Length: 396
Ligand SMILES: Nc1ncnc2c1ncn2[C@@H]1O[C@H](COP(=O)(O)OP(=O)(O)O)[C@@H](O)[C@H]1O
Ligand SMILES: [Mg+2]
Image (tube, rainbow, N blue to C red; front, side, top):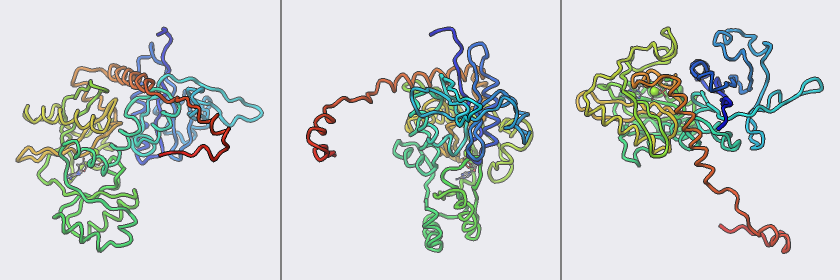
């Protein structure tokens, strides 16, 4: 490879309730890339899904400015699905007095949390564009982003998860009394009620009685079409583990025990208690658990990440029953806040080393995909044109 710097497009913001958290993660990532080897193309996606690039997006302070997008140096852009462009089209709707241009990108780094970024939709676009990108591909992102499907995949792989019940918004609205009966037949209170595809504790409720259950289902239904209900682990502690890898080569980080203030970690607990991102929430690293339990959680983390076809990075969160050390995987975050830099730090990895490893994994996965055959030459078209269109019936 030449000595030219690699161009990494870092995407952040996004059409998600975790928009603001993603801006912070994106800024941390851009600041930590070694400037001698990487050139950063910042790409900010607004809450309503408009894409912009330009130097002012490299400063976190600028995001306090309502006029940020009018600043000199900011240009509209989009990521082209056309493989020839291999990157961004800048100023795509150029008029008579301006020009559009293509900026080639070597690697895309989606620093987006939640919907339209961590859920497989963006990954689909990147697959079309045929550009190497950091993190899970379409399937791993979509499975991990959906709390219902995560459990389906993990049960199949023998990874322990809490029992659950799920319902669509349509079913809930059509027959709420029936749904409540079904839930009460199955579980005792307290219960957790969650939108299937949100993060940062948004839309999540804990219910100790039927009135709160109904209210929480209404709230969850206002955030997502599919809703998960599961028993609350009342005597539990939370333990998190980050993983990194691809193919046959995965590693687990040291473990942390995040400490909540209320019944569960709310958005406020996670992000609004000062400092940068989740870093400020109280946590114990390494988690004060015995070695056997720690080793079990690390190997479950790798098994779970492989089960969802994970690649790149994830932070995997567990609920552990304090008395018995029973472990339940709670969720897989495929774009963890701050990339769990603090856990890798504990493992002796600098931020730059984590980023370089992720870029390396992205490239490896991209090379691997090239080994798949997409071009399959047949005589179908010449045969079909001889016979007329009736001859070209599709079989199976
Ligand atoms: N079944 C449960 N029992 C006890 N606490 C839970 C349960 N599910 C979630 N929690 C608490 O709620 C928090 C948020 O839930 P989680 O499933 O992690 O959603 P999010 O994607 O929003 O982080 C967890 O960190 C934990 O504190
Ligand atoms: Mg969580």
